[in-house]
Amino acid sequence: MRAYLYISSLLISLAISGFTGVFEQLSRLWILPVSYIGVFLLQYVVFFIFLWLWSLTVDTSKPQEKESPFCRFLTRQAIALVVPRLMKIHTTGTEKIPKKGRFLLVSNHLFDLDPVVFLKCFPKSQLTFVSKRENKKLFMISKYMHKLICPFINRENDREALKSILRCIQILKDDLASIVVFPEGHIYKSDRKLHHFRNGVFKIAQRAKVPIVVCTLKNTQYIKENLRRLKRTHVYMDLLTVIEPEQYRGLNTVELGEQIYNLMAQHLGPENVSTEKRTIL
Image 1 (tube, rainbow, N blue to C red):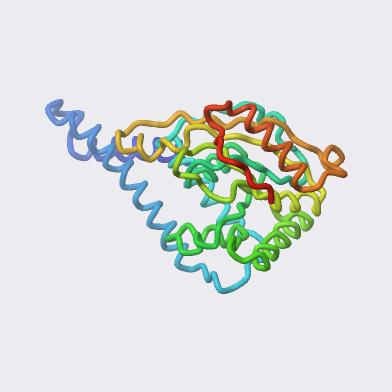
Image 2 (tube, rainbow, N blue to C red):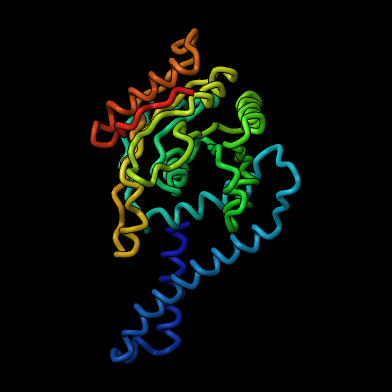
């Protein structure tokens, strides 16, 4: 998509320059770069208007049993356009990404754009995200989440939360998508450090009997601040390990959560781990 924008912008700007006589009068040479930038930005605007118009066709009141391939395609194109403008992602461990079958991906949570990082780093894994129910109100984005079968969870109602967990298990068993979950439950904006887990989410992997992909993120909390300064953020996504079902067999959710928490904490370092007393759920 990016290559198409660059090439088409160049060709159109060359055509405009030729039509306006740039190559005959060098005094008009400024038209070439200005038209290139203008055409480039215009195509961005047209693309995102199309994304918005398509979202208007989505009826979130109707259950979405399978993801929309077209929605997945549009999401990938949007991410390909936006991510390079916002951040430079550094990765380690991506060679460990399971090539076959579904998995549960778990990570710390620093900023609202964390899911975008994983969509960029796992382009072939067909990820969907467990999200708080409040995100159902997000402009436009909630429509795309609906079409990508993202389960929304009610953190204040245990019965409703259980339904969401069961939905995640079914998605994995039916081979519809791999699930991404942030075990902390929400973003701790006070310090942006690793906090205690809500260990119930590990039931998803245990019941579906899928591998658990353990990752960490660093620096995404600076994206908004750096954007104001027109500066890209260096983001670090590290895939620490993949825990196969036979490796966690016999562990309960608390024990499994402790193991994964310790892996993340060790990798992130004490400066990125909260000293707040942990609550085991």
